[in-house]
Image (cartoon, rainbow over all chains, first blue to last red; front, side, top):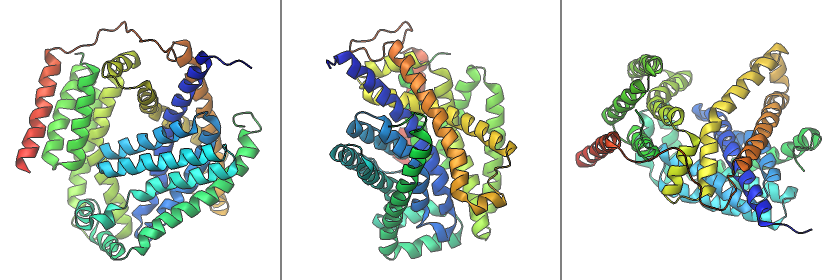
Length: 201
Length: 226
């Protein structure tokens, strides 16, 4: 079938609108999921919660976009820009773009099948995990910033976490595990609800 | 009083920068200018509510900051901190969102030579936050009528089912809204590859220069002090 340039630019607009919509939803849901981290014992597992909550919207997003690489980069970039505006460093924004590229490549490589979506979900789950890297890379400043928000027991717990690199590995590990489990839940939900009513392929 | 969208963006960037990285006094300086702009737009009710909640949160945060209050206290303290630290940023965003029309924003971004690939998601995302909250509230009410609540025995038994009950209707709803939005965007010629024109006149006036000068003065003051 002959395709025209007009059609492709129409789908581009649809993809861009989807990036905006799912970007807003991703921000809201990740904020809700991460709020569990206010309890000191759950700081490390909060990334798992974020991945679990955001898996279903991300799977729906992957199934709806026609330019996965561009859309994943833009989604992560939007998240990065919002986080930079709210006080995170430029380096976090760059990391977001890297994760976006990797997620897009996973989707392109596996032609948006389940494995591709799962890998892309894991890549995007590293975005919220990376938000706490300053706790290890610039501990003093991060603790000084947190001391104006939290009580001394919470700061002491953060300082205890920063003394070893295992919690950092745990943050990424739990994030990835949550993304994998969330991916399987998302596949079931997609089949049960969205594919049945024609909202996803 | 009508400001150029570029001035509003600059104000938002400077205000957010000051609110999240500078001491409280700079945040207050940005709050003052935003409040004046909101009052000039006739949004006095919002300004009064904002100041009431903002000063209340700041007062209680200051009161509770030095107390040993444990985990539950940390959650309350963090909520108060978020309120009094993030509320000024929300006020600035409220001003930018409610007073900027989409076509003016698009025209201004295109004048700044920013690609549509960045502009469209950004504008959709900013405009979509209230929709997400409205839809979520409506779905929450509907679920509450059916006895599905966050703090109930049923939710404790199957948290995944609760997530499904709340998340799936929300996703269906916003996906449909998104599809309608895409169709509307294409109908209005957003996908056209030619240069777009805009009926609204955008450009700098004396008010814009005053706001720019004020923001630059605040930034310079902050840099000199540090």
